[in-house]
Length: 424
Image (cartoon, rainbow, N blue to C red; front, side, top):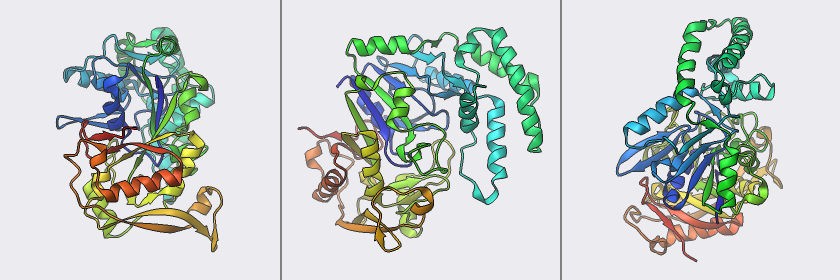
């Protein structure tokens, strides 16, 4: 299936980077479609860990073309750092990374305003990463943004920068924050722009040509579907459309170009920052999962909130995104727990909830549980899907029957090789 969209179906951190890297051995291109440096896609190959924030996850393979689409908001300095670090590790981006000239830039004032707005919320904080993502998307929607293509015309970039700097400094002053000094703010950006010029171009034309030639392409989603600004747990969401529609809009492809939609889910649930989390485990069990799973943010280092698998949320994400195939990750973390649970129902005021509730109601629901016998086997050395323990097979069969999507892969460890594909 030449064009696959791959997105997370929970609150992010599902293991999308590992899955895309594992699948990229046989693909031609990977396209990042939305989000920014707030994403942290972790790939481990041969014991070496790399966290990719902007560069598409499949680019650790030398044959893969990477496209950063128009829907991404780009921190230019961070992108240069990432390209440089990958090049030093033997992963040269020259000639195979394309940065959309329509992608918007995260500017220094966006980060300052992000932190200022979060501080102003007091005890109502959302849990933003402080990377400037929300303010950058807000400027894009307000038609005030500066695009990567503006780096190609330095005089235009400087003119736009100066106009926005004056306006944003007034906002920062209103927040009672220090204003930005022009030279310190613009010089690193100009240098980053000069280094990125070789990559910046219209990204749709090469993507269109890849699709027309029936090349294998993965559209890479960032964050998770339950963090979508419309379909997620608003306002405790990210600032982009993590839904399938956001991936298409973020690269320019029409819906008919898609051949399949694959969703990635953990065998349990995690969440970073504030927001409703019906299956959260606040006691020792949550701590055990966090420690075993290494559940600390790849971007922020913050400990993730942990809990049991929420089948209600995943089914909602499957249905709203048109998911046909699932990848279940971190099944190895639940080994030796004795039993495994899944939420199969929400109840509010004693009544079953018929549709997925908004955040205010979601915070009040009582989960209904189904309990499964667990598995004690070490999964790390397994190489065939059919060798998975019966307890895990029963759990994945439940996920299939409840959500209506087929489990096509199960990840049994952090390494690239530790993902088992189910054969028909």
